Image 1 (cartoon, helix red, strand yellow):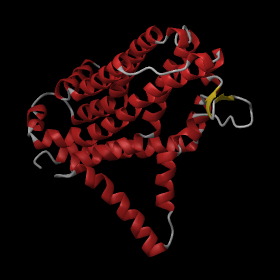
Image 2 (image 1 turned 90 degrees about the vertical axis):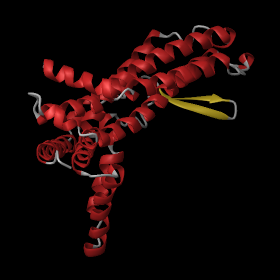
Image 3 (image 1 turned 90 degrees about the horizontal axis):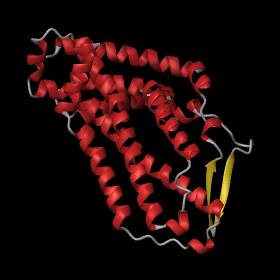
Length: 292
């Protein structure tokens, strides 16, 4: 366990963008809130409007961090093993009593868990600062609507639930990225796309089917339907009219989470199996291709 801890620390030392990028995003959003224009007509906003706008705003800041986090984590997983071979540092690490399995698993943990946790902390701190700035600059409009313990608790639970379930659901992609990172001589981003695209096109040309494409699409876009409940028609969604527009949000996030359905889904376990096979392949490539 101590070895894995030091290996994860190594990833933070060698990849400073892990914490620099979310810090820059947080500073930029905070400065924009601090010095940007606040133009909200408080006379037409009811208490319900203020509550909905506050929840939507806090959720929106989290989404910004979550999108950037996914982009960076994808790039990290594609680059982590490739970079070791490119700068020849793999030879140094192989001279130490550290197994290739431990190295690959530490990089997988960093990409799927450590990086999301860093962005979670950055999003939390940024949201707190922004809520304070907005409540001071627009106190007459928002007042205490930004400081609702139940809302903050739901946002924390949402982040942690997303970190755990997306790590499991997208494990096949993470494993594939590690395989490409351990094998490709160059252009890792291109090689991560070409083989799946080739399989899709060959299936269409020779068999006239699109099974592979459908499976890939289901794995890419099917996460929400497996991790969250379908609450349509149950009155759990609240639509609030805002002039000519409207905002629709779930009445409570607690009723949206579906961990039992997620863990009982065959797609979840099939994904874990496929991800495990890819990770095993990445470990074997790491053992055999250090001279490339």
